[in-house]
Length: 569
Image (cartoon, rainbow, N blue to C red; front, side, top):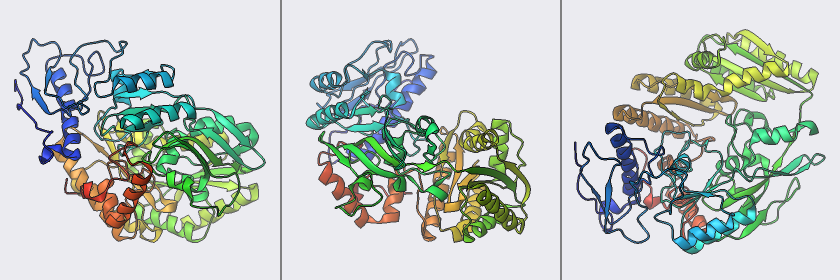
């Protein structure tokens, strides 16, 4: 087609086109249209010479014909509404030339730039990078990215955005999966990468305080010589601030808990720019509301976490890891249930199905037997680890476990867990060019076998490629659906599978997400799980702290009447 529909009226508040969901869809499709047109006319893709801002929230968006001789793609904006239009530039300006964000007031841009000493970017490629995560959701970039270096700079940026009623989206390392960092309404993205200092380590008290941009690997490297370590391990080298914001967990949660159990204090910049320091360096406190844990898991919707105080743990005297295979998935899951029922204090207990093991072998060049496989790790004294390993070996033998391989040296354990942590990218490598959509349900461990087998049946019948990996010691598992996002039928089938899995988990007394969080991708499921009354309470909390609704809008804290139930959108 050489031309496109003439007008979309998004200014009429009574029109369905004015709904936030419709605007989000319009933004997404305009972005895809630009990419498709660039490919069709053999033009550079957005972010490689073209300035693109794919959110035409103007009064009218008019698409002009696209002759084959055109240089850039032209979208003409007619009668833009002040404060709504984010613009769609068709100029082929190089990325090194700064641009004025169309929807941000010049006064705000100047104020923010001065607040962070010029560490800002409006480069199209930088904006696009900050509008997407590791999930399959559409890229929705902000208008500007800032790189503060201190809590005070964050405070000045957030305060300025509050005065101008401009959205703020905190950004860690971008490894989330449910659209947490998508700029649904444009605004300013605060990238915490420059706030990467370990501020305090109290070895005797086994705690520390770090800036939010420190990653878990950086922290463990810093404290390596102290005899301590930080155990929460979501797989990706995520930032501590991002892990606190999403209440992350991972492979060690069965022994050491999630971020909810390991955060003891926070420094938070509130939506109006004020700074508050929460929590004390003690083992317990009954002083007032537990505001620290109000912000843990809030996903940047109540404020910007700039510093985190954490529990640390002594490095175990002895660590041993093992891997073994099972004749089928049912036997493997029942072995996990038996181990947990015997209260063996395993540090990690991870289950991979045969498809996932095959993917890991291809990706990491390992030679695991392609069968349902459990990875174990044991921590403690030398005698304690030996006793744990013996107990697990005896229990799993009753379920047909075979091929036990032990890893006791640091190098052997690192190689084993490195292979396990590549499972997500190994799954993606099975279909190059496709995107991942991992599910994240949790069920009571007594229902785990039933849930996993039913989930495998669902993806098999839907014709979806979905290796399975699970932190099965706490009932959490992921079907890592690998999807061609250009295939609408495949996406529809995957969504139905995801909905069926979540509803199955809810019927079993489980939850729609164990560690990935809600973002905007699971708002409909949260409504189904928690109910409108609970979401009313969440919306009231957000309204009290963020009356202008600038903090990561369109996600947690959204009023239930503005949430589309899962499966109906």
